[in-house]
Amino acid sequence: MTARTFDLPDLGEGLTEAEVVRWLVAVGDTVALDQPIVEVETAKSLVEVPSPFAGTVGVLHGAEGEVMEVGRPLITVETEAPSAEARVPDPAVPETTEDPAGERYREEERAGSGNVLIGYGTSEGSPSGRRRRPRVRVTVPEARPSVETRRVPLVTSPLVRQMAREAGLRVGDLQGSGPGGLVTRRDVRSAIEAAGANTAPAPSAPIAVPSPPSPVEPGAVDARTGLTESRRVPMGAFRRTMAASLSRSRSEIPEATVWVDVDATELVRLREANPEGPGLLAHVARFVLAGLRAHPELNGLVDAERSELVQYDGVNLGLAVQTERGLVAPAVMGAHRMTTAELDTAIREVTRRAREGGLSSEQMTGGTFTLNNYGSLRVDGSAAIINHPQVAILGLGRIIDRPWVVDGELTVRKITQLSFAFDHRVCDGGTAAGFMRVVADAMEDPGRAIAHL
Image 1 (tube, rainbow, N blue to C red):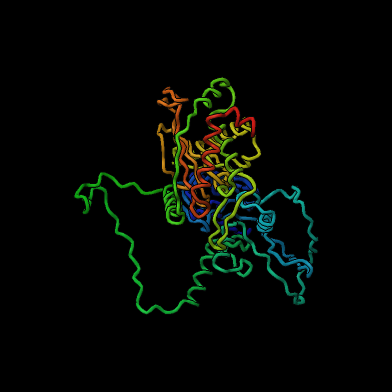
Image 2: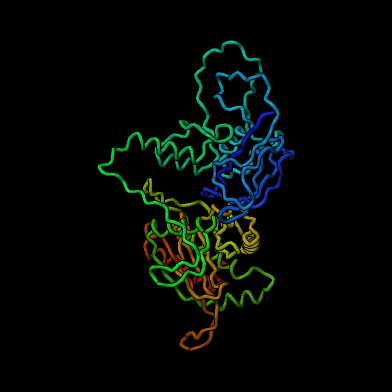
């Protein structure tokens, strides 16, 4: 038997840690390839991690409730001893590791998937859509001819590739410490530190490194206010990640905000006339998609490294959802291809999954523009923070009866407020206002807007 240790993988959300919620196996259990072994909680979702090995569970390296870093040992599985035979590389085929899980990692990476939790141990019978030259299994000879080969880099996460690219490193030059030679973010950080140690000039004076703050017990008197602290609550993985993301948005994006009051009376009437049809949010989402077609620069990102503005061919519409774990913004993938009825179904489904903690990594990270219905919280307006790396977010306030002037006469109408925060690097106020008017005009005359969509 051979002990094989599987490290906690990069879960594809830009996270560095996850909390072990529940082990699905115990020491001594027999596990199959791709069998879920543990349920972990990332910053914004619950994820089942499958095993890349088949065998007997030897060690569980984390206790339930423990927060573990990505790249640290997760589980050790006792597998059958490898055969004494070895494979002689075909000079025409680049040499790769013999780890079947690693091979499937590469298959997935070459296919363009960023989801590292799917495809560790895909069934051998499942079609891959590609052909490979078969290897010949022979016993190892006493001497082998020297064949110059190039190692295929084993990288599963696009975040790892991005880290290496931004640091000027080639992933093919890195030695992976993960299963089967998998290159992890820890490996990239180590390479960056090593490169910095070799090239950085000696400092002229010692650099002061702040020491970590000493622990403070609840009940201590705060020196600034003179008040006694009633309690201290540690920030969990979710709150720490959210804080980092929001801080990054505020520090990197020069945002501006515009808003407009909208007479949504006709939109409310349209909904009331067809109570079994799409909800108000689905209609607003459809109008947002029309606004993004008219102003596609708002559906993209800023590639600061290359000083380029990127636009997407399609919209993954993010939706701000309040859950027990906090605020999340999962995306309706491919929203631009949906009818209003299909959007309504998709919005309800993604909202349900968000509140149950069942969102996929793709839904959590794939949004290109966010719609925030804070009116559901019974507030009128909000200066929302853009969901980095997106470049804009539209907020919808509550719809309430207000006095409004129509054709010179004062009357009561259903009024709501739209607020729009945008990255000023992408566009100026004229574009932002143009987008807002597309959405607002459609809400005020939905029948005409729907006829032209």
